[in-house]
Length: 88
View 1 (cartoon, rainbow, N blue to C red):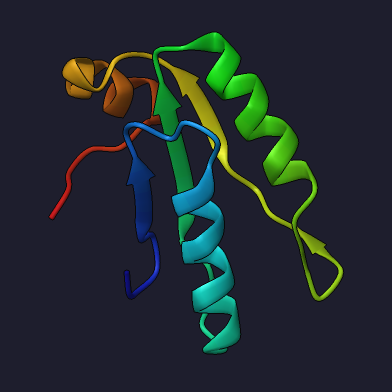
View 2: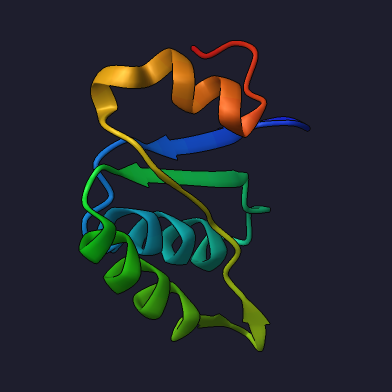
C-alpha cells in the first residue's frame, strides 16, 4: 500500500473491522491512508459498517471508505464500480 493511487479493498467487510484496523495502523505509523473500498453482499452488514466507519476519527479527520453492495464472487463488477483498473 505504497505510492500515489494505492487502494485497499476489503471484499467481505462485515462490520468494517479490518478496514478500520488497517486505517488506524497506517495512521499510527504516520503513513498516508490509501483509497479504501469495502464490499459486502449483505445490506445489513453494510449499514453496520457505515455506522462503525462514521464513528472513527483519526486526529479529527473522518475515515473515508467507499462501500459497495456486492458479493466477493463478483470481483470484476466491484472493481468496475469502484473504477479500479488493476490490482497486485
